[in-house]
Structures are given as C-alpha cells and as structure tokens.
Image (cartoon, rainbow, N blue to C red):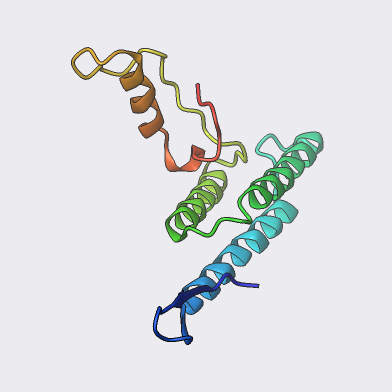
Length: 143
C-alpha cells in the first residue's frame, strides 16, 4: 500500500492528498528493480565458468537484494528513496558490465585526503563519507 501524506487545514476539516502519483510511480519503479534483480540472478553466469562460482554468485545476488530491500522498505523520504534507486541501478549496471556481482571496492587510505586547514580527523571522516561512490551508499565501512 503506497504511503499517503495528508495535509489538514486549521479552519477546514477537509484534507488534500499529496504525492499519491509520485508514490505509486516510485513503488512501481522499486518493484520493477526487484523483479529485474531476481531475473538477473536466475540467468547469471560466473565469469570463471565454474558451476560452484555461479551458484555462490547467484546466492549472493539474491541475499543482497533481499537484505537491502528489507532494510529500506519503510523509507518515506522521496530523496532518500531516489538515492536508493540510483544505487540499485548503478550496482546492476556495474555487475552486468564487469561480470562481478560484488560492489567494486574503493581504495582510499585512512589519511589519504587533503585536510582542510588543520581541522583534524573530523574533516577526514567527513571527506571519506562524501567520497563514497553511489553504488556503495548502503555499505557502512569502505576500505
């Protein structure tokens, strides 16, 4: 059931439905991505050609999709939902292009970013957070 926001006016008991179409369209887009991931997992072939690798990678794709979709199923902020959709799309496209279902790691040394005029470690942590690519937003620690 899509989320509906109601706006109440102080002098009037009536209400206005807001974002009904946007929420329905977003819901359809998310469900389409979910189906696309499961179809992709069903047809997935490991780059090595080994059957054991194919089974492991298929299982990883299914588990990762279930985990992340369950984790994000209660989101209501449209911007956050859009970022999750973008992350999902990026991971699908990168997986298809590189034939690797796992997210590509970024290699960033702990103090590898230029500090902003001696603001200490807080600025390093902030820079690391902002340097995380869109396809790794759901992962907590990237090294």
